Structures are given as structure tokens and as C-alpha cells.
Length: 348
Image (cartoon, rainbow, N blue to C red; front, side):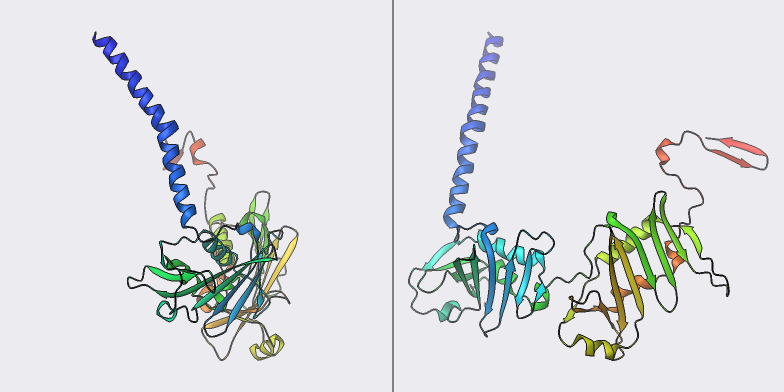
């Protein structure tokens, strides 16, 4: 009897589990998805966004062009400057507007918009879809708790409460919406790094057996450069630092005049990535001891960065030299170690 009861109980549990898995859980998931869709203020897809415009209460505006077909520069700023946009920042804004949910409606036909900070709005976002249709988001003041913000979808539409994160996303300066990296590359694609300054010249080259470093000998009259094996970890750190070089500010106009005032370069850098060379020339501003200016291509701005970020390029060639006495490519494969001391051999 106990055996039959156990079988019956097992069948009941299996049936219950099947009901939960195939009926109850999918049903609950669909219900949650329906609730989310009901709260969403917009129904467009980010892939349809072709233009974005951010307008502030004081009349300033930043305009973006979205071209997904260009994988290298999908977002560009067209106003107030022509520049490559910070892809992560622009994409995040488009995604937030697309997925923006209202916690509740405050007023369907608000007569006094000033109490919500919407007359005029603190921020207005205009989203152009497929170069034809537009969606509008007006962002006003925060509520009493500061966790939500008053929004509406343009003139004559209801006032809602939405997460304050959308306002925080919009609270950026122009420089924060721009691409700040001096270089964009994958470390695995770098074939050569050349650093030239009044103090030293370094050439780091990727070869089949690993990295090789070359630099001139300090002995006068000795033309043949010193060559040594490179430390893969130190060179990896260098490439990581180079990919992290970011401008804190940008100079877009009268660049030639700026360069005249900066004088002679303090360092030249050339990266060979794939088959393309990426040059950068660095200058020290006599009027700003803590700043360094970098010039990459004629189309790019002059980047202003902190001297602290630049320090990595001033490391001596010996910093990248492999100092290992024994190169254990894969220590796991070692089966035996012999140590000879005073005529005696120890094996472990």
C-alpha cells in the first residue's frame, strides 16, 4: 500500500510541477510583460531612431545623427559642433527613452505646468524615427522624494511620474556626449608601438615568438639598437592604458593657432593596428603645467588630458623588458625540476 501511495504522490507532484512550468509561470511572465508594456510611454524601437535632439530650458541644444550602418561611428553630433559622439552615452539615452515607464499619471490635462517644472521643461528630447516621425519627451522637476521626475509627451498630453534616472542621464555637458578616447582598437590587433621623445625612442613589435623591444644604445657612436624580449604583461598594461586615454576637453576651432602656442612636441606616438597607422603628437602647455594636449588626425579635435594619464608614455624602455630568468610557457606541463647545489643534485 505504501508503494502505491508513493507512486500516486509522485504522479501528483509531477503533474503539479508540469502545471507550474507550462501554465502558471508562463502566464505570470506574460502578465508581467503586459504590465510593463502598459506602463511604457513609447512604442518605438531604438533601431528606428535616426536623430536625437536634447534641448535645455536656457535654449541650448545638442543634436545627434544615428547611422547604425556605420559600425565604427554609429552616433555623431551635428550641433553645436561636428564630432563623433560618445556611443555608450547616446545609445543609453535612446534606450532609456524607448523603455521609459510611467509609475502613474498625475494629471491628464494639467493647467499649471510650472508646479511640475514643465513650463518650460528643464529638458526636451526630440526623437526622430526613420527620418520622418517624431516623439517628444519633456522632463521637469523631481517629486518630493527625489526618486521620480515629472514628464509628458509634448503639448496637451498628460503629466506622468517616471524614474529620475532619465533626468540624470540628460544632465551632461557637451564634452560628456562626445567620444573621449584618443584611440579605438583591440589589443590583439596591435602590431607595433613606437614612442619617440627627446629622452628616448622605443619600438615594441609583435612577432611570432612574442613581443620584441628595440631602443638605441646610450653609447655614443653605437648605431645598432639594443633588442630584447618584451614582457607580455607590461606591454598589455601599456596597450590598456593607451586605449583608456581620454580627453577631458576638446579644441575644435583655430587649432593651428593653438598649436603655435604649444611649441615643440614632447612626445610622438604611432600605433600600427592591422594595416593602419594611428599617430598622436603630445604637447605640454606652458600656461597649464598639469595639462597635456594631443593631436591625432586633422579631422579630430585637439584633446586636452591630464598629465597623470600621460605619464604611462614616459616609462623607460627597460620597463617593458622581460626580466624572467626562465620562461615557463606552461608550468602545468612541468614534470620534474632538478636543482644542483655544491655538487649535489636534488630532484622534485
